[in-house]
Length: 245
Ligand SMILES: *Cc1c(COP(=O)(O)O)cnc(C)c1O
Image 1 (tube, protein in one colour):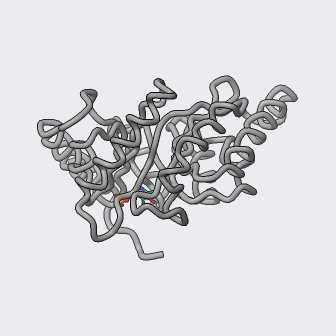
Image 2 (cartoon, protein in one colour; image 1 turned 45 degrees about the horizontal axis):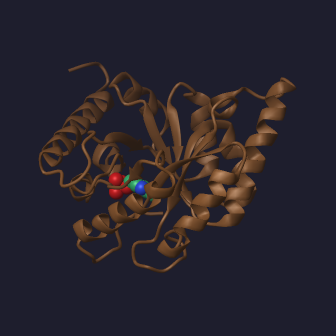
């Protein structure tokens, strides 16, 4: 035991999640590379991000700009993924710290993100802001698709995947990284993630480098890994239960 009980708790939870991921890798139906782990740290303090870094987890996910921007300023050495609903007026802030946005779900957001990356680069050249992850590398964009077939809070309709992908490819400063989804409530997650895998295959026909599949959370990471997830986003399984928002 170390002097830091919270660190021990995170280490234990992390070991369990890693074990679940390893077992699911044995049942993988598609894909071959083991999935990466993104720890979702929303609601938990920057100190926990520091502990996770010490425990070997360098990729973290957040879903609110206000909370994320503060923590990213405290722990800039982590790789920050923005995974939540994003308003276009927040993109100027998000591009300062996030290397990836997993929740690209509409044309207006693509335009706003591109504009923000280019504006950020101007500001870096002027010496006004820290370079962050997007000064030289293009911002990684994942198209969030709704697996219950409807557009709305949960991402774009599957039919909009191709046009949104084209928009990202055409936008200076953005890089098309792949697809993201949350399994619909009440549906077998294996079936949902199989559909996401098929959408990813479709996307890779026109954009062969857009290979990421961001899928799987604490409750359904096994199903996601079986169906080709390249990045699982695990919050409560590592950090513990969070208060209901
Ligand atoms: C909170 C959140 C997660 C993590 O959820 P857990 O059930 O805590 O693992 C994953 N993805 C998104 C988009 C989230 O908002």
